[in-house]
Length: 519
Ligand code: ACM
Ligand code: ZN
Image (cartoon, rainbow, N blue to C red; front, top):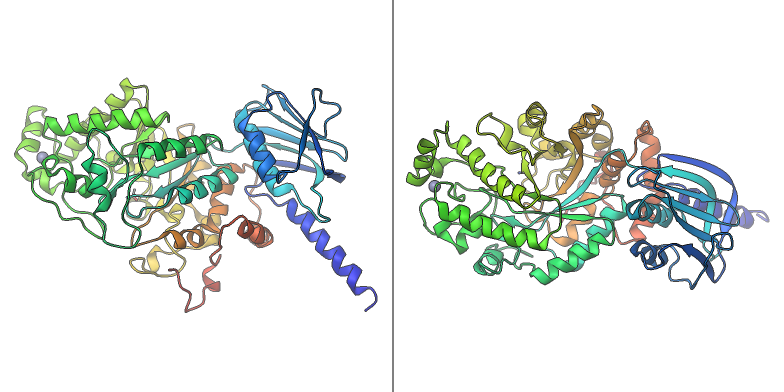
C-alpha cells in the first residue's frame, strides 16, 4: 500500500507522455531521442517572419498563450522556425532536444502541419509544457486530402463550419469541399439573383434547414480556412439537385412550372440544358462564385441528374438534334463542357461527380477533374473511365468514405449502408485505389452528407473515430499498423480529441448498444 501512490503517479505520467507520441495522422518518420524539452514560463522563439499565421496558431494551440520573447538569432532561442526549400511540398521536420526545438519546412503549409503535430505532441505532466525529444520527418502521401460538408440539405452555423475546418487542418487535410447547393437548400448569396438564397435557402421544412451564407460570411470562412492551410472548394450542383434554385426561378427548368421540393432524395426537376438563358444564368452565378472563392478548383456537381424532363423538353431535344448529340446523357456532357470551358477561361479547374464518365460522349475539356463516389452502385467504373480519359481523379467511394453512413441502421440508412472503423481501416476502396500510385489519382475526400436530417449535434459521432482512419490513409505512407494497434492508439487519444470539442461515437459495430441513439 505504501508504494501504491507513487506507482500510480508514475503510470499516469508515463501514459500522458506516451499519448503525446500518438499523433493522428501518424507522422511518416519518428525517431525518439532521450529526454524531454520542458519550457519555462516565458518562451524564446526565433522566426524569420514573426507575423506568419502558423505562429499565431502555434501560440494559441500549443503554447496556450504563454508569453513569448522573440529572438533575433537562432542559437539563443528555445524554439526556432527555419525555412528550407529542399524539403518536399507540405513537408516539415521537427527536431527536439532537451534545450531546443527546431522546426523546418519549405513553406507555410509544412509549418502548419508541424503545428498540428505539436498540438498532439505537447504534454503538461507537471503543468509546464513538455515535448518528448525526437526527430520527426513528415510529408503527405497524397496531394488532395479533403473533408466535404453538406450545408445544402442542412444549414450549419458559421461557427460550426469553422469547427470542421479546424478539424480538417488538425488532421492535416488541405481542402474543405463545401456543398452549398442542393434540392433542399441554396445556401450561397448570389447578388445578381437574390431569390436563390432568399427563397432557395428556405425550402426545407425540417430542423436546421433554413438559412444561407452571405458573401461577407463566406469571405470570413475562406480567410479562416486559409490561415489553417485549407482551400475552400465550393460546390454548385448542376444540372441536378437543383429544386431549391428552381423554386426561386422556375423558368430555369424545362417547363417553367412550380417545383416541388423533395424532403428526401431528388426529382426530375433539373436545370434545362436546352435554353440559352439557363446557361447565361449559371455562368453569371459562376462569375460571383469565382470572385468569392480563390480556389483553383470549382465543383460543378453533375451527379444524379435524371433525364425524364430533358427527354420531353422541346428545347433540350432541339439542342440534341442541332448539335447531333447521341442522347440526353450526351447533352449533360455538352452542358458540363460549356461550364467547364467557362471556368477554364477563368483559369479554374472543374470537378464533376463520376456520373459524367459512365458513358463516353461529348468530350469534356482538359481542366476536368472527376470525383469517384458511387462504389455501391457502380464499383470502380467512374475511377477506371476517368483514368482511361486521362482525367485526374479524387477518390471518395461511398464505401467507406461517406461518414454519414452510421454503424447501425438509422432512418433511411439500412444495414447495407452501415460500416465501422475496421471496415474503413482495412477495406476502403479509395485507399486501395491510392495504392495504385497512379499520378492521375490526386487523393481522397471523406464526406459528411446531411441526408435524413443529420443536424449539427449529430455530426461529431458520425465522424469520430472513423475519420481518423481516413486521415491516416490520406497522409501516412508507411505500412499500416495492424488494426488492433491502430484502434488502441485511438482509445489513447480519444480523451484529447474530446477535450478539443469532438464527441466520439462507437468505433466498432460490436460496441453499439441496441438502444444507441444516433440522433
Ligand atoms: C453523391 O453522393 N450523390 C455525390
Ligand atoms: Zn429542357
